[in-house]
Length: 71
Ligand SMILES: [Zn+2]
Image (cartoon, rainbow, N blue to C red; front, side, top):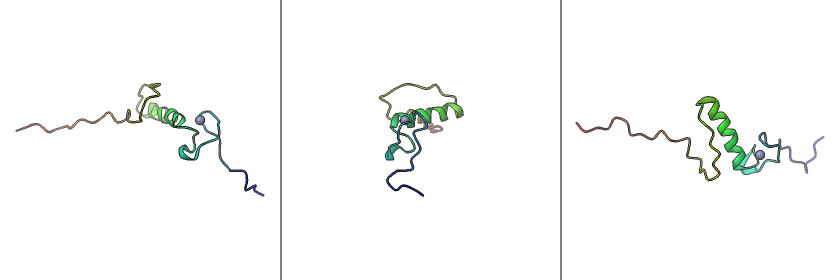
């Protein structure tokens, strides 16, 4: 017995609000960032920066060319 008018959406695991389709299962980009930071901090142990102007490229800082010196 399911109600078609009630979406079966779990609340945002970060703040408990209703999730937005674009950011599911979270409610906003901020909550996705929070969860991502939690995940990254658990794997890479990086410091969590509270930066609202972040574009999401902060996790991609390893961009060194490597061995490319002239002979
Ligand atoms: Zn949220």
